[in-house]
Length: 162
Picture 1 (cartoon, one colour):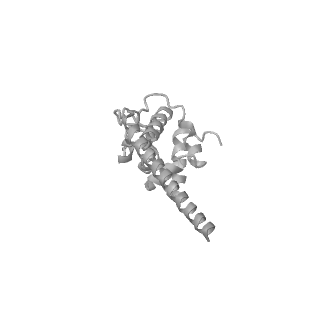
Picture 2 (cartoon, one colour):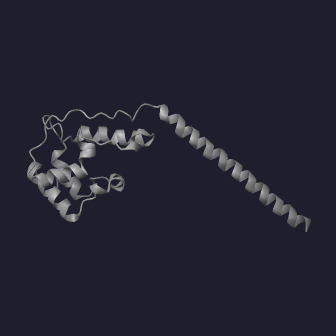
Picture 3 (cartoon, rainbow, N blue to C red):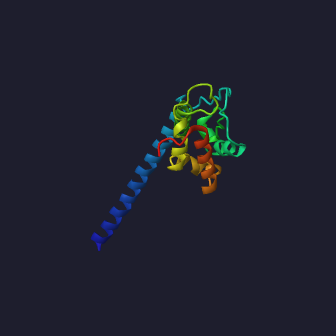
């Protein structure tokens, strides 16, 4: 009987110790999340002026591109509240910086080397990216809308690689 009671006591002390470690781990994560807020990267939420847009084949194609592409591929980014909180701010800033560098519908007066790939990336489901669609359901295009956007991109830029 004493051995059974000792085993129960050991189990209880193990649980207390586990809770202590979990509490310490949680406190460490919270402190880390607070401390990383002082890193300035990810808060440069500027929208340079729109210099020139492409000649859209229709207003519908432009509207679809605005819904699905403009957050990262234009100078008209709407910065959500969570874009101010690290580490999400770092990921969002990186995506916008990279998206604008690769293809920017607001700076059509400079070469857009990735424009010819627009139809292909939408057709293959690479764009808009799945995690963007999770947070922005309006960017989730129906099959008809996706086909219209692809056709519009092909009219504007060519089919790209098939």
